[in-house]
Structures are given as C-alpha cells and as structure tokens.
Length: 78
Image (cartoon, rainbow, N blue to C red; front, side):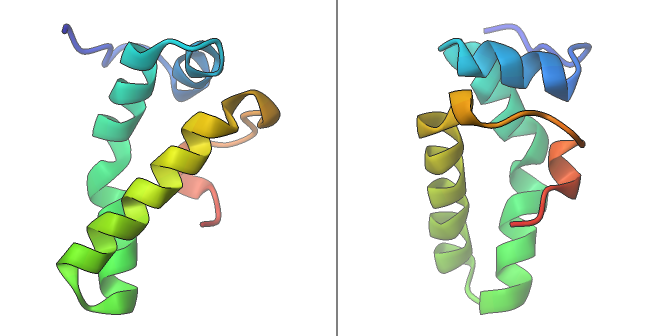
C-alpha cells in the first residue's frame, strides 16, 4: 500500500471516519512512535505502552465519526 505522506491529518481522519482503512493506517504509522513513547514514559514498560497505544487506536477507529479534527493528532490530550 502506498503511503499518503502528503495528506493532512484532517483529510486522513475524515477518510478514516468514512471507513477508509488505508487512511487510518497512515495516521497510525504517522503517530505510533509518539503515542507509544507517551505511554512508555508513564508506565515504564514497552509492552504495556504498546497495548495502551492499541487501545487508543481501537477507540479512535470505533468512534471515528464522532470526532472533529481541531488540532493535529499530536496535540490531542490522551
């Protein structure tokens, strides 16, 4: 699958909300290091950090139609 590196976060999230799994995958790839790193600094366990990141991504996917993009994903308070 080709990367969508030129797409904005807002565009990718809108497409994700419409069920586009490739767009959602791009968001995950774009932010996974930041999200896992966030949790790793708090729980001090890489496996738990990865599990918590997966929970965040699952919730975002399941409830994608409920959110509006007001800021870059990196600024969203987890």
